[in-house]
Image 1 (cartoon, rainbow, N blue to C red):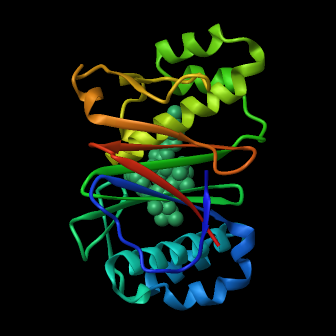
Image 2 (image 1 turned 135 degrees about the vertical axis):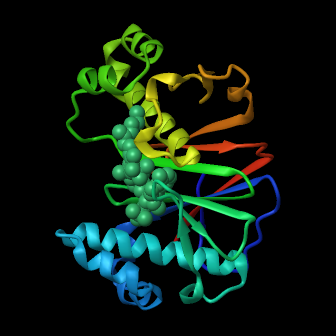
Image 3 (image 1 turned 30 degrees about the horizontal axis):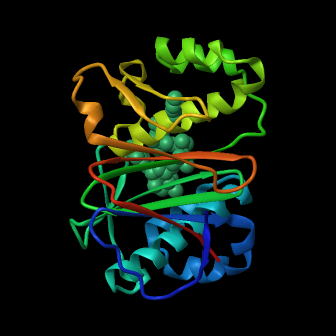
Length: 240
Ligand SMILES: CC(C)(COP(=O)(O)OP(=O)(O)OC[C@H]1O[C@@H](n2cnc3c(N)ncnc32)[C@H](O)[C@@H]1OP(=O)(O)O)[C@@H](O)C(=O)NCCC(=O)NCCS
């Protein structure tokens, strides 16, 4: 359940996960406000997008990220500074405490925030034409491919996106991007079962340290969030 939320004072208690869903189309009229709080590097990057829709998505995602971080940290949104991991994962420099991750697809942006723990989020628009078999065989582990094709064909697309977003959320939490071997971990993919990290092949105990959670921010979108650590509660807001 995604509760509507605009701007108020926000606090992020330890072990609480905050998820935000943003409908890009509802924020197009605020582009200039978001543009004003971006730094020079972000503006330069925004101007490099060939398509207007990609440019506005980037500006809105960074703008909302700055608004939310500003609120959590008590800093003016324009003054927030980021640093980047070796594979490009952004972190905020003002606090070692607050961790975040962003994903966008279609006209939906998802942001996740938690203290201390590694976090990754992913969302995908599910009404695109995809070659489920080809992509699954290329990116998924043997166990995931077997589970996927054991399902009735009617469930293939949904299970495919469940698997994709859960795997992607995990590698985004790790921060390594595609450098991480995708066949070395196994996620659940049935919509009827809880999202779980079933196997971490390099260390059987590693999987116990992780939380996976499935999200459906809007119709035709599937997503997931992954956190390394204990999550005591999840609050989901739709950012208005
Ligand atoms: C960035 C990456 C991790 C995800 O990219 P993506 O799926 O195209 O895009 P998303 O919208 O989900 O995420 C992009 C955001 O993740 C963040 N990000 C960038 N690098 C990241 C990294 N190494 N780890 C985690 N997050 C990262 C950024 O905030 C970025 O948004 P920005 O470009 O507006 O700053 C990409 O480098 C990648 O490796 N994708 C793998 C795709 C794939 O084949 N997955 C297989 C799943 S089975």
